[in-house]
Image: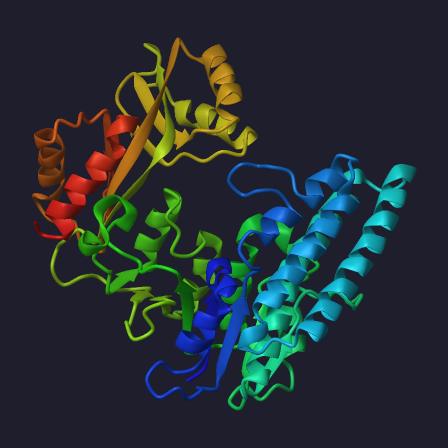
Length: 461
């Protein structure tokens, strides 16, 4: 059986657990070959290279783009990565080799960036093209570092391991993503080796340009499809569960056994990604099942996500959502019967590169829920020029999701539970496919809503 397996940054930072729970079978401590591990950078490293994913705090890339002192950032990065290296000595990393590898990589990156800045200053090459190349270059460092270390540790623990650096750092060839994967894996006996591959792939399309911070899962997906693996596996630090255990308690967070890619898309839409949507589509199209496993519970079978699964019994599988949306209510007495209103609104959202999470309409109003960020003010300003009344409300969205909830009573029961717990429903949306019922509630009622819906609909209390 050939598998491709994604290991995230948090798990990579605890590579001793990865070695014990994933690489070696947790029961007999034997190694199963025919496995390809696509690895992320260690936790927090990509934030240092680019910018902080949540806060936006500038990293090396942002400082380079702004003409600030990025070299000091490279010095701090090298110090941080060497510190990480020393922490893996006790599980078999040859620290001297690892330090030499990452020092060489950062020294060369420093020279590349210096020359990029010089070329950019001439004005002969478009600034955005140089910055795009710099972002790609910097992004690749984290996965190359963690990938080299992982292969080094595994070989030193007696595992026949091949390191496949998809970053293309030392070559000038222009390959598509699939082409680079094919070239880099050519000649490797996958049945007799464990392969460590970088989550970053250098390609002529520019993986960062299209996918930005979701690139490692896209690499994982493309490797699975190109090599036609039997199963794709993502190792996370938690189970895919009925709700966030931090809100409902671990005892009430029920692991999901099976679901489908449609449900995975619903989760991603509200920020609870089992897998990045652009990574799931190739797997879904190729009919490759995805398994989500908990790194720290290796004997648990995890969650299988497949293309056509539908639960036999009608039930809610997952309750999730986000407290970080803004509702935009667009009201105009001239809207009734008018053709093209949705198109006008859609053009405004497209111009600001924003998609909506939910939508509800009546004769004279259209209500949208979008992520609450710095783009909201510009969107609202344009809409107010077009329509009579545009109101906004910071709110939370709570979703009741399942592969088979198209049965009478689920919407009514969920709404009843919210009412019983004195949680007002501001807005509600459900498509005809009925895999996701969305309730908009007050921000401060978000956790209460998750708790009552999960405990009654999923945990069965």
